[in-house]
Image (cartoon, rainbow, N blue to C red; front, side, top):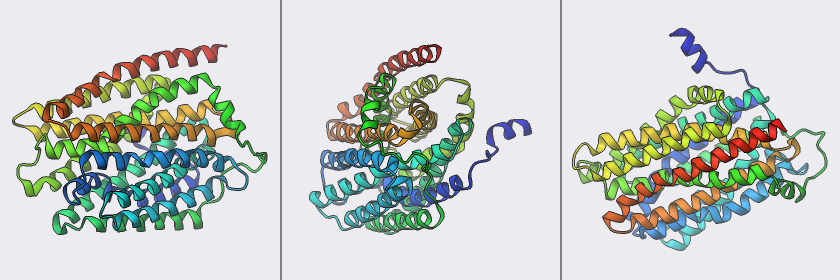
Length: 417
C-alpha cells in the first residue's frame, strides 16, 4: 500500500516557479468556481434571458478568444512580450470582464462581459502552458501539466462549494462576479512579484507569422486539431448545458429551494474527484502514447454522456446516476488535459511553443463556442430533444476515436522515419 501511494501520489521535484504558478492558478480558479456552474442558471432563471441567448453569450467568449489566442501565442514567443507580460495582461482583461458581468442586467452587457472574458482567457492559455513547458524536462512535463490542472481543480472545487453556499444563503449571485474579479487581481500580483520571464533569452529572433505558417503545415497537428475541438466541446457541455439539464429536465433536486445546493454538491463532487484522480491517472497513462491516452479519455466521455441520458430517463435515483455521470466525466477530463498539452509540446519546435500552444488553445475557443451554442439551443427545446442530445454526444465519440487511431499511426510512422 505504501509503495502504491509513493508511486502514484508523491509530488515530483519541479522548478519553484511551477509551484508559484500553481498557487496563483488555485487562487484565481477559486473565483472562477464561484461563477462557473451558476452563471448560466442565473442569467436564465434570474435575469430572464433565454437559454439560447445565454448559450450564445457564453459561447461568444470564443469569438474574442480566437483573437486572444492568436495574439497570445505570438506575444508569448515575442522577445518584447514573452510569457510573463502576456499572463499579466490576460489577468487584467479578466478582472475587467467580471466587473462588467457583475453590473449586467441585459443581453448587450452580458455579451460584452463574455467577450472581454474570452479575450483574457485567450491571452492566458498559450503563455501559461508555454511557461510550464519552459520550466520542465520532457520526462516531467506530463506530471507538471497534471499538477497545474490539479491546482485548477482544487480551486474550482473550493469556489463551487463556497459559491453554492453563498447563493443558497443570500441569493447574491452578483457578489460571485465581484469575488471572481478580485481573485484575478490577486493572481496578477502573484505573477508580477514572484515569476520571472521563462522564455529563453538565446531565442532572440521573433518568429512573427512564420511560426504560424510552419504550424499550419504540420500534418499531425492539423489532424489533432480536429479531434481536440470535439474534446473541448465535451468539456464545455459540462460547464454550460449540463447544469441547465440537471436543473430543468432531470429534476435532480427533491425540492425547488434545494436545487442550487444539489447542483453545488454535484459539481463539487465532479471537481473534487477530478483533483483526486489527476496525478494518479496522469502517471498511469504514461505507459501509453499520447493519442492512445486520448482514446481512453474519449471512451470514458461516451460512458459519461450515456449516464447523463439515463439520469434524465429515470423516475427514481436520479441524483445517484447524476453523481455517477459527473464522476465518470471527471475521469475523462483528467485523462484528456495533460495528455493533450504534452502532445502539442512534443510536436512543437522549441522556438514556436507559444504558437503551437496557441493553436491548441484555439481548439478550446472553437469547442467553447460550439458547446454552449448547440447545448443552449438543445436545452431550450422540448424534453425529447434535450434528452436525446446526450445520446448524440455519446455517439460522436466514435468519430473522435477513429481520428485518434489514425493520428497514433501517423506519429509512429514519423518516429520510425
